[in-house]
Length: 534
Image: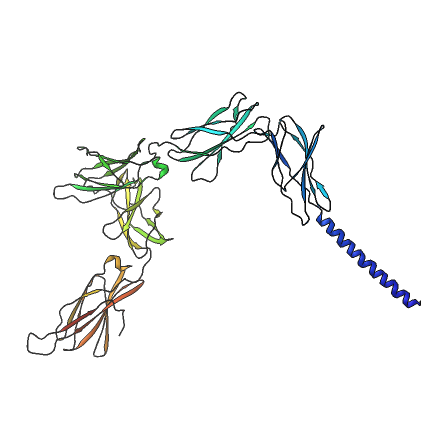
């Protein structure tokens, strides 16, 4: 064999050896990869009611090969092995005074791994059954919870409570531990400083003084605290009509419902009392949330109380000045601006320095005016906490309050958002002669204006010449001159605000030249026609 042949054979053998090495390395890598993962975090407790050990661990990552899990329990006298499932709870009967070594061995075709040894002391690992809540005694601000633990407990316990309101996710846990002696099976605890007339859920958990595991929480029980008298006065306001011929005035009292936390129960009704120096009003029982009282020209003090089954709220006081009370001035100026779907209101304070607060009142400028209001202290500005509608005109008034007595209001009008008027002027038929015509129209209804009316406009043609006239908002008619007898005219009448315009068209024919007083004319109204120039 020559040298070249030997060299080629040597290279072939080297290549074959290298390929064999790669195959062996790949096989070894697969074997290593398929070794079972070691079980970790083994945890065991002694279940007292069953006298058994209950163990769990975090499930290991599954492998492709078939894998078995063997639990091994042993002490100095005996050893026991049995198969369990991956990460599943398993239990084994044993005595309460035991010390065991516990491991979990994972086996497959490739090999096995074993968890770290858990040294298990059954007495210190006792876990009792969840206690049972036997009763709950309620007051308006507390719950006294009674519970019972299982029989057969021969060591001292400590317990803890948790509670929460029905509309709250998070539990409040009573930090204080409640001792329960070996001779006791029952105990109780009072949870205080709760809110009246609210639903609460409670639960209890216990453990031995020398043990590490708390029991499961007892089955939740729910109850409701009792009612208490409303803790807050209602927010009351008024508007007063002028005196009639007999000198009597009608006061309309309005107030807001208390929220549930202030009502502290079901509000059954309202009591209204009033008095002057000379008169006491008959006590009025009212439903929510207004009443009217006829009074004389004197100054009156009103009190409004909400009540439930537990009692009355504090009284809300409001004073109505005498009819001729003129010595208190109003705020000098009031401004309102749209902001974030509401209004920002500010005003200048009156010269009188004894103002205790202000009331900002608002309502849509239509009848009836449904009033809303809010109180402002130590400020001459406020953001209104309410929902407002676009295209509605709001009257916003600011009242200075002098020791519960309202002064004169200062009022402004404002729109949250404007739009073109909903419809054009409603044109009425009027006098037409041979050379003149008078066009009249009705004012736009407030709810159809959708903004502040800036002006009216008239547009028409005479002999090919276009005439255009702007009229102020108080003008509701216009006279056309120099018309041609027997001629048809198209007149556009529109109403304009800052957001747009709406118009109507009227078609009329002037009288013919004739010698009879019975000569007729034509007048046609074409409503809701879009404005056209020319």
